[in-house]
Length: 387
Image 1 (cartoon, rainbow, N blue to C red):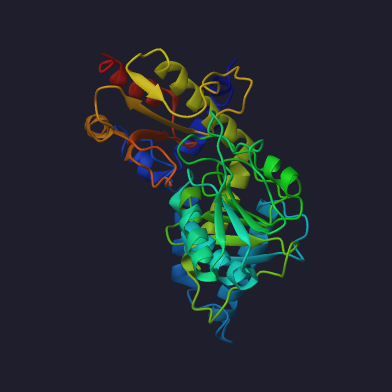
Image 2: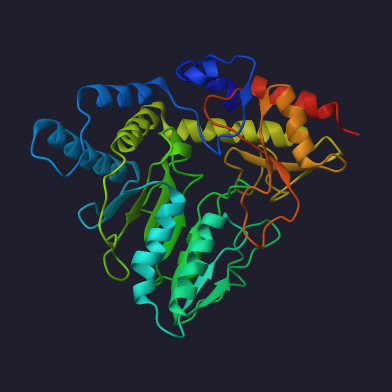
């Protein structure tokens, strides 16, 4: 029995909890790397909060305000548990509007004050722009060097060609790549640089696969809530406070996005109850189903590691993200063709950095509400264009 067969009943029970999916039975939403759909439990938690206890946090002494302040504090605690934080009493949690703001906050508020002439930052320039541009901005502000992290032929970080010097002050890394879908093996970077802080962009892993910070020895984890079934406009910076000074946001802290934080706490609760291990298995299996089908069609080129396309691959498999191109049809046109059939995919450059792909591609990204039938339907439409 395959993973998809084994988990079919479990997945059906979860799928019906997503109103956008249930209300559009003829549409296959295949763009979860851009933003996920929201389960009813998350929507209910937000409505309940807004209609029974809405107030600002950390500013009032009346019951509604106290309730909101406590809810925000509980959300920070839930986040630490969700990440399996091994030292919650020493870590910092800052709620932000998303990964971009969070990465920029680490760069501006924590890194820039520590930089001196002659220092350097290591940056992955084929990852998302949100994890490249803030570090370039920080280097320009401080007048220090930025050095590119090299990639190998499988689009993984090439740790064999990477050198870490005595003036390396931070390594920026990605957990799961937003185009190629693979785990970027950040543990190899840590082995090369045991004393250098690593800031991890977890936008495509948080809420998709388990993250265990008791074994993943990074110093910052930054993510967007809207990719993990929470509302748009929320996310977080988690900081270990182990290498260098403790992380604290600089300047005046404005009003938090309380409804967004409530939605994030509800999303983590829902994901915990659903089971992130099973969610990850389901998404990987859907990705394998897609890549195995695409690999039989000569008109298509699948991006990323060519050795990660099958269920029995000896390398790490893709985490529910598959990008590809048609040899003759432009990706934007292909995106329109698929949308006309109710297959909603992303078709552009995917905000990739300066060393990324130079030609647009189609990206399919799945989550637990997607089904094998939707992948088969996508493959059927793509097969009509396989010439």
